[in-house]
Image (tube, rainbow, N blue to C red; front, side, top):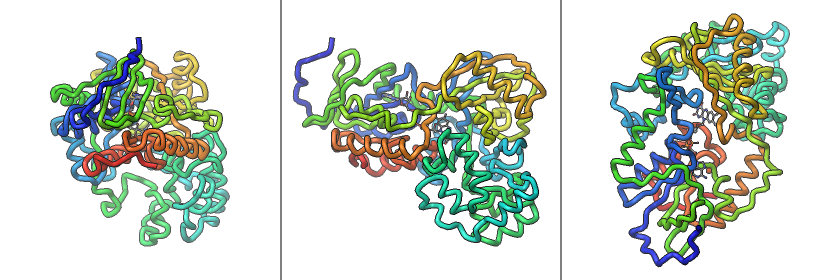
Length: 472
Ligand SMILES: Cc1cc2nc3c(=O)[nH]c(=O)nc-3n(C[C@H](O)[C@H](O)[C@H](O)COP(=O)(O)OP(=O)(O)OC[C@H]3O[C@@H](n4cnc5c(N)ncnc54)[C@H](O)[C@@H]3O)c2cc1C
């Protein structure tokens, strides 16, 4: 039965701070807040970790939510904090050209040499037309209002039309003119392999070209072009181990972590915030840090969301496999799929970055992006059939183990309609909850999606602006 009696008066000094969402972001926020007093973490799922959690399949080992490898942010304190989640000997450090070592299925080719579309694989006439249309300078792609204009300003209309638009539209299932330029970071199209090796070396001296040009073979990336930042991943498979270690640290420190909760109401009060759970429990908090998608705060805060104005998320499916034999992923950490005819978005090749990943067989995760959830057996069949069609296996692979997970929240589509709707909801939330709630994480700002950006924004907030208010 819900409690109906008014809450007694509270002293904000002694009230807990509440963190909503126990992904890595929420747990990291809680870890920083706990030095100031009591903290409660509220998580909707039945366990912590969010997208940085791993699935533990016993003797088959752990599998991640697709490719999730930590990357240093350049903020030394945050990088040290993340590396401190596990003892140093439990991390593998990936440096130099192996920092982000990835391939792409583009134009019917499995590229092990670069993650970016390699235009030199196009038919000669088309390739020449692309180069002829390449503007000497980037014509302001950074301020482009949509993905189509981003591609045209950065690469000219021929490359936009014949390379970029089919990729972004195949990925997001919406016209390029209706997509945010953010989609070009997801695909990714912020660079292109424009030239063969020797020409690429010559063009390095031309800053206008080189900032749009990918090195055609990542293995030959000169040291001068390599990032000083590293990536890191647990030595034994499963990024979730880092989150589990953090969860244990919080439990040991007395942080109250509650999983499987549903927040029904969020009401600003004189002393802070009152949260009412589905089971009627009422929690009083001095302040709330909402690290889940802001859309999930709308209902509890009484803010209406017009979902008819939004584009539905794509269904994200994880097919975890242990294969008898290594598929043709080479030594890349992951292989992304740009060709629009496939539902496969990405292959995670654990053996390439995690040396002690398994005992027998070859573990991979195949991520599919589909319109409808469908039956897991049929989804697995799609994953296996496409491996053969793409050419990384010779026919259907021999499978020792398989498991399929359909992600509850899907993959947010980076459409302009969604960006506008979320921005409107953020503003309405700011009016509804004032400075009693701080939004952090994906959706709290238009530019936050990638793990590194999300963690950096939250880290800066909790270390520098703990008393800041909900942003508009
Ligand atoms: C399919 C997919 C692939 C991705 N691939 C990459 C990638 O390759 N590289 C990269 O950098 N980033 C990637 N990302 C983004 C990356 O996963 C996020 O940046 C990162 O997980 C953010 O961490 P978080 O803790 O903020 O969010 P999450 O990990 O999403 O955690 C949020 C938590 O909040 C909980 N929650 C949700 N609603 C509520 C509620 N109402 N009440 C209480 N709890 C709630 C959820 O259950 C979850 O545990 C990907 C995202 C998706 C969806």
